[in-house]
Amino acid sequence: MNPVREVFGGFGVLLRGLGIVLRRPRLFLLGALPALVTSLLFLAALITLAVNVTGLVAWATPFAEDWESAWRGLVRGALSLALLAGAVLVMVVAFTTVTLALGSPIYDKIAELVEEELGGAPQAPDEALLASVTRSARQSVGVVLVSLTVTVSAFLLGLVPVVGWMVAPVLTAVAGGWLLGIELTASAFDRRGLLRVRDRRHLMGARRWRVLGFAVPTYFLLAIPFVAVAVFPAATAGGTILARELLPEDPQGHQDPQNPPSPHQTPPGTPRGR
Image (cartoon, rainbow, N blue to C red):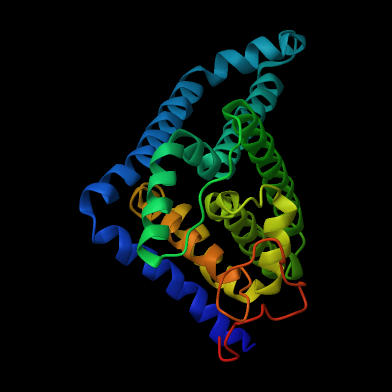
């Protein structure tokens, strides 16, 4: 498959998702609500931390009380900045996961409407609520931890002159977009009984350029404060469309979630031009 065509096709998936939710303004506004709530909660938490950071750092460093004021101020100032920077980093990385968790019923409804519009959606598997919540929480924590590891690694790599400056942003965008794709396709894959993250990775690997064409621009848009509020409903709809495109089809054109393609094979029934 042509990588350039696949990348543009992936971006087109995001635009298709936007078109679907814009045709339902009330659903679009409802889908934007969880992202707005998350943004306001994170902003309030950051302001609270900034107001109290001096006291927190002083409480955590009692050993510095007897130091000279210049050294004490320098160390505590550096720790305060590090604490605030770390908090911002965690918030950026966890934003998507927290928003999806808060708005789970809403985003499931958006995914369901996309499935109905496109047709051919199976019934959701019969999974106990507690088992579903536990599985989703475990997977979300895993994604956040991986995201933090990648982000910190990219930051450290960015300290390397020249090479690090070029490689770190690319690594952050690709890895962050890929992890975002794993989260945004979850609802459609879960509906088809593909409940494990490895199932999603396997199918995404077969069309990695298309996935990145969708996920990387979405990742950058969701990283812009409050722009994410408007992008989230479209990203959810786009993730559902993308998942359907990643699923293989039998010769009659029916999706077969029990027979996912090899990451090195084109899914059966996929036109060669895609």
